[in-house]
Length: 181
Image 1 (tube, rainbow, N blue to C red):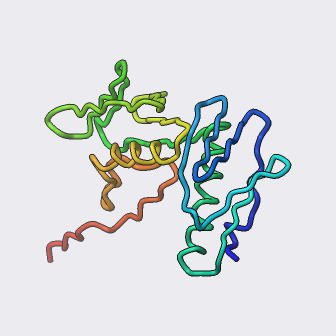
Image 2: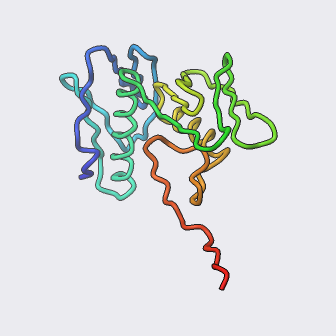
Image 3: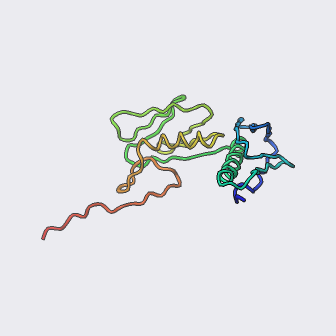
């Protein structure tokens, strides 16, 4: 059995889970998420826990078993606690500012870059070099964060760019200038 798929998912008190024929609806204080699942997988709710079971031991069924369990766990965590990612802007003159529903970023181009903040996400800029993205859908938070980061990925020589707060950039040695002999 899948090591991930066989683990139960506890349901917090403030979360409601509705399981129908081939879909799951999870409602919480932060929002609601729904998902349709494959008929090869059974999702059962007992005593405020969700169990994901598969019908056979085929390789594809084992893959789906762990996948749907992870997706369900992320849905439950998202509507109860939420997800957060933090970006750091490293470089002289690199700044970020929130203006209404737009995020303004200056990262060394001749023009500022504007990002439209998607529905369901909350973006804050505690200071000019930090961007904090919160939301209840893990995929939306990760996609928007990756889109911002792709504008200027951190480079290995000076470390300039947009990086995740927990990311470690491996630094390389620059060119060594030979001394005059």
